[in-house]
Every structure is written in C-alpha cells, then in structure tokens.
Image 1 (cartoon, helix red, strand yellow):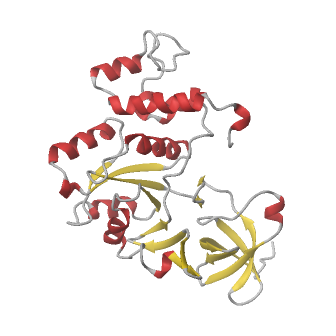
Image 2 (cartoon, rainbow, N blue to C red; image 1 turned 60 degrees about the horizontal axis):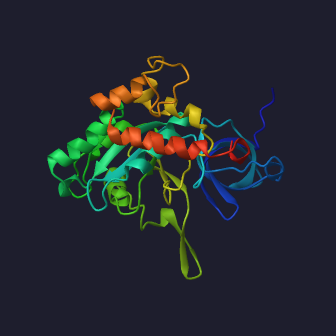
Image 3 (cartoon, rainbow, N blue to C red; image 1 turned 45 degrees about the vertical axis):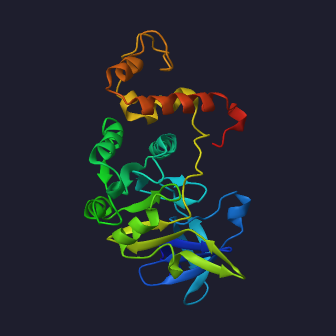
Length: 297
C-alpha cells in the first residue's frame, strides 16, 4: 500500500464555529469537515480520532472519523475512558438522582465512573462517610476531596493518569476549583475554555493535556438524559442490582415491588442503599413512559 503523505491522523481537541482543531504527533491542524458527514448525519466531536487531508502546513479537512469507543451528547464528547462525578458534601447538598442517572448513562456507554465528594471541609466525617457508603455498596470507587485543602487530589490524579476523562457535576459543587487543583490549569477563567463573541463569552468543549491525562473541559454534563435505555434493561446499569440477576422468584421480575424480589429484600436488609433503589424506581417509571419511536437510539 502506498502511504498518502497528505493524510495524517490525530485527535480533535476543540471545535468552534464549524472549525475543528486536530492534534497530531507534530502539530495542531485547523480543519473543516467534509460535506459527506452532513449527508451521513454524522458530525465530528471533540475526542474523535480522525484522518485529516492536508491543504496547507497547518490546515486541512477532516476526511474520516474513526470508530468511536463511545460518545456522549450535550455537550458532545467521544472516546471517554472515565467519568468523575463531583458532588458537594454541602452547599449544595448531593443530588442523588442526578448522580445515579449519570452513572447509568456512563455504564451504558462502557465508561468507568468515580464518585468524588468535594467540600468535605464543610461536612462532618459521619456525613461524608454516609454518602460514600451508598456508592461503595454499589462497587464504585469513592474519593473524599477538598479543593480548599487539597484532600484527595493526589488520589484523583493517580486514578485518571493515562486516561481520557470527563468531570461532571452541578453548578456550585466546586468542580472548577477542584479541576484547577488536579490539573494546575484554571479551566474556568483560562483562555483555553472560552471564546469572545461581541460582548458575550461562550464556553465550548476542549480536550486538554494535564496531570498526565486528557481532560475534557466542558460546560457540564448535567443535561444528559438516559432516554435511549429501555425500562426493562435498566437493572443491568445498577451494578448492585445486576449482581442479583437470577435470584428473584420470577424470571420476569422488574424489581419494582414484585413478590419474591431479591433486590427488594437486599434493600430491606441494607445491602442495597435505599436512595439507590429510589433512583432505580424513579428512572424505571420515567423510561417506562417513553414509546419506542420516541427513543434517541
């Protein structure tokens, strides 16, 4: 095979206004995407591995999008290894349903998740440990952290090393301050994460190299929805429920109060957290209402 020296492979690290910035081994190339992607209803997104056909020393066209390991939408990112879910111990209090929804989405996309409880300097040890126990029972790695004191920062840095990582969390949980501690980059105010348009400053998605990892700087993932998941498949995205597969009295058990349900028995015994089970039943009810033709898959 004859090598085409005008084609290089790299990763999209930023996309703004129809331009994509692709990092290769040697340079960052400013690109447009070929029209064929619009025809195929496929758009390049940050994190994509792509082929670029060069038109100049540092310009070109995205000519091929390599197969994605996974992707998330709103904001769009691809090929994520790990999702770090940041919650605050206080101010605001943890939103358990949101955390559980994001964990379900990550699990359904084959993305590993880590629970990070920030602002532990504002809470008692018992309060922090009670929160952590909910997710430790579900076999998720859990880290207590404080952007103020630096607690947990080294542990997070070890976990994300060599990975492509997205951080998620509601406004006010201290995600930006924690990221600054972890990466050494001020993602909230730095030029890497904002562009100026007239009087307005617009956040966009960017993939940055920091802390021996690739970190998505995004406006946030709190808007992600689990609409593409079917209600009767939801159980497999709750690890503690999936571990009880086959132990219910009836094979068709949906774990919503059926007789002989091993999951409900585990909740009653404390082996499964009550809040996790409440999230499961709430999400199940929402997904049950979605018709197949309304799904986003």
